[in-house]
Length: 265
Image 1: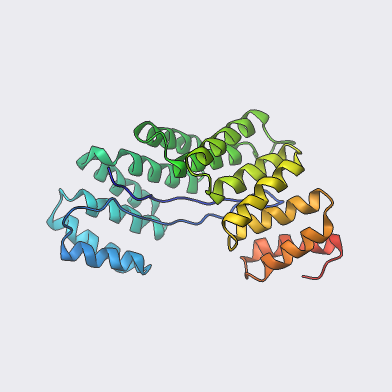
Image 2 (image 1 turned 135 degrees about the vertical axis):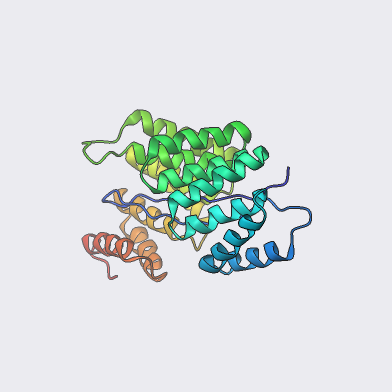
């Protein structure tokens, strides 16, 4: 079955354990989409989620059996941070068309992850993998969830069992997509938490090579160089990262590391 990927949240750990998440969407195309659905897809592509949401609500009211419209409505709601509504729309899409199990469960996992319900996220990602075991995006996201679970706020050190689970999912994702930079970044963060700085640098250099404009990869690599005492490489990488105008929380972390290394932001 032809299917493009659904929501994926790309995460990288900051020194304070914070996260950044980036969502994107796609749909499993129908053979003959209506003109209305084509127009909605164009709105989604343009990031016009309010307009797409309004149009999709009209479509499902007129055609309550339209699984594709419910699926897209879930994506629009997700991007508008209307998570209960997104969950309801995805669930309706799955009820109408069970063949959507992989994408819908993936998206329900992303919803749970985004709202901090990590145990439900794991359950949903595993359900998605039952439908599509070799999906690198879902394998990555399950690994990212385990990585966050390895770092509970009240813990003195990472949970080694959760780190091992995260490592396994990232490695399996890379078996199916060797150029998936997100899993490389995740694996690099696992290695850093395991005090394996050399292994972290190796995989993070591969991530930067695969995705030179990926801020998550540059930030993680700069951290790894700093931890390993490779100060000049750390300065160069973090300064390159700052030129990308990252979110303030990332910029502050990078500037803090540079200040410790005696570099100029």
